[in-house]
Length: 302
Image (cartoon, rainbow, N blue to C red; front, side):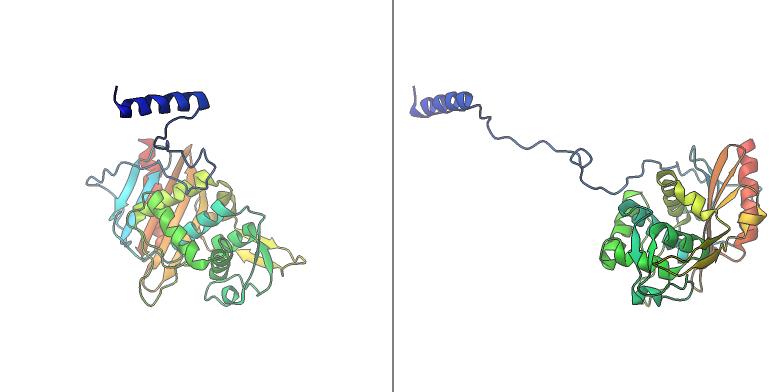
């Protein structure tokens, strides 16, 4: 019997007596089981069956999609995967990242740089403290850039890290034609944010299913945030005209910059159906959204 075999036999006996198992490759552990924080993963990817459409409304928007959020049926599309500037629709991702890290009651301290953001704003004052929910009212009703900046600065403690999370989340959700340069959607000197109508439909559907409380916030026509010992009072009116002119509309977000033109994400529920619509680069988002909602809900009846 060779010395090597004798040594191996003795080692096996020793390991057995001591209860020691030979080393092996560590089994992978799900981040969810180990309670590590992970970004939300989207498992809802509608089949992109963009066949020729007939008898559809003529619209000026450069990109558009209207989609049934339940079965993923695409009811209308125009250049749905084209990369386009999206203006303040960027803030929908800003809201998602905030909600993934903070509760609605978490208080944000407003910095001087956030308070100075222009042009659309709540008129926040440096040193004030507002809850995340209060800031979300500002974002959805008046597209508050100061509120979005406050969220980006405080949520992770690092604005750059927050923007990185926005882009990481986009990848997780399958938003393959999206890039975020900032949390507001304002045009940068270079490297502006962009997305596609299809990507924004994915994002909106994921947000409202994961955090349905935002639907109530975005569907608010008017709210007064009363004076407290941490902030002044705020009187906010929604800029979404369809809330009062189209039955069933529940918000969701508008945007505009000279480069992006008029942009819109709309959410509507009617007759047991829920539709998310996206318009990018529109010359008349209100009337085009109304026309396409009519078209979408009519199509759902057939």
